[in-house]
Each structure stands twice: as structure tokens, then as C-alpha cells.
Image (tube, rainbow, N blue to C red; front, side):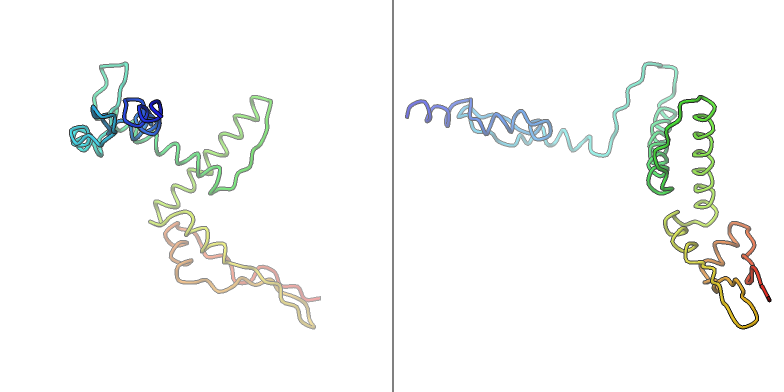
Length: 180
């Protein structure tokens, strides 16, 4: 009984140790003389002063702070671009061994991403919204006694606005007419 009571009231309470050693919560806690763990208001106040601020460390002291911050912001954009290449553009893993093929693959991925970014910039909309709208343009095949015709569906106002913003002509209404 003495041992369990000591662990509950002493400095080595298991639950308290877990909280104090936690990578996130431990920074804001303090241990009282009784062994109880409490939130430290002084540490909380100090942390509030740092909310929304970044600490960037570089080895080249000739670079201006603004340039370092801009570089890190661009890094976030690059990481988002790679995420877009994997998910938004639906690229699958491709395995190359030859250097020329690897370079060609990277170039094609870069060009695809560039087209996505240009499209977003020119239309003022996100790629997922643009893609969803433009994928609704369908081509139908209609048959009759005298032959068949391939005809595009009517364009919506949003689709027309995207095409105009990208300076693209509307696809022709009729693609092929076969009279046989």
C-alpha cells in the first residue's frame, strides 16, 4: 500500500510522466511539489506570442530574411504541385531506368502541371472545378436510316466562359457525318 500511495502522491506518477514527456502537451505543463501536473500559465503566455510565426534557420547569412521567407513559401507551393501531380492529374507510378526516359517523364509532368497552373490563373478557378465542368462535354453518335453523325452536347455558360478565358475555340458541333 505504501508503494502505490507514494506513486500517486510522489513525483513519479505514471500518467503525469506520460503527459510531461508528450511532445506537444509537455511544453505547457509543470509539476507541483505534490507531484500533480498542472498547466503552466507562464509557458502558455510565451507560446501565444509565437502563434502564427515561423522560425527559419539558414546557414547563409548573406540572404535577406524576406528572401528566405519567400523561398519557404515557394517550397510549400512546390510540395502542393507534386501532390497535384500525384492526385489531381491522376499520374500513376511509372518506372524508368534509362536517364533519357526519366528526363522526358519529368519534363512531361512539369508541362502538365504548367498547363494546370496556367488554366487556373487564366480562369480564376481551381483545376478540380474546371476539370469537372469540361469533362461534362460529351460526344454522341446518332444513327438514322441514311447514316450516322457524331454531335457534341450543348455547352454550358461556364464551359463557354472557360474556353473564352483560355482563348480556345469551341469544339465543332458536328464532328463527322456519314451517309451511306
